[in-house]
Image (tube, rainbow, N blue to C red; front, side, top):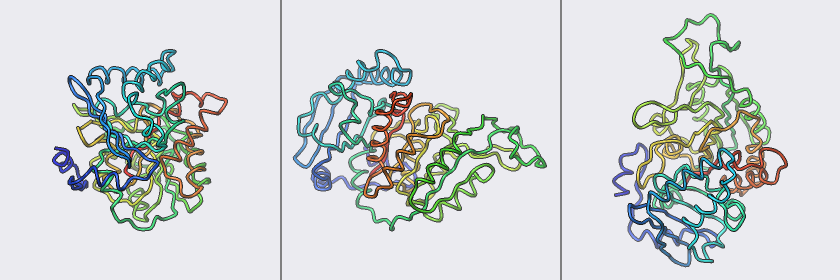
Length: 375
């Protein structure tokens, strides 16, 4: 069933499922565990796999888990006084029956089911500590997808950082060509001044070359041109909008065109592109949001970039502030040390935020970001 569903996605190759358990265990290192949650009407299940073997755990029914996950997400986002207690309750519901061996694994690969994709996993409470304080957390689409991605041949990574920020979003922006004829109704959005500061600071922290697309240069044409150069990292500090219809999806908003028309990138278009980027960062509001499909993860911007060839996508699960991007400064400082995976660098950045002395120490800021991918 998983293979059939994945065949419907553009650019996604289906991994063979024969002896899947044995091959997954062989591919894992001794410090990793793969946790897969499948929710059901009367009961849900958690599969926990490491090099030592497989354990299966019965969980509460789907309605109970989903209701608690939604409560936790809203509570963390709003800074509710009950957020810590609810986060601890959700941790117990999902992972409370795990054995000590799995708990000791530092790197957790987690495949979630519908209703759980937007859960702030880093902020769950385990014996008084945040989950991110105990584990590197990486969300994956499935065990077969993770395995197939690890076996895929890739070219040597480049050293190029590509940043997109401070696009032109409204006709009052002085950077817009005043001589251009107006288009048939553009979406007028507020300028993200902090996004320019964000990508510029991240580029300075990156150890290799960098290209920044800001203002009118933040266009589809320029983005495709720079992607053809094979950047190692693509950092998109843009508005992310939600489409209409019965199955809303995220749309990346680039600058208004010279004709003052909105330029939006839907997931279907991105999935048809090609990139060998090690990391895509979507720092826009709620960039992870999408339609959920059983066995495949989110069919939105994160999944689209993975289908295009990216190894890891860091995205937000709720609205984020337009600021200079302190968490991303920490991300790139840690990523630049060499040998650090994006999910581990994100964890290090979140730990820095937790131990800071300002508003960024609150989970509502740092727990908004998750690492999704197959690395």
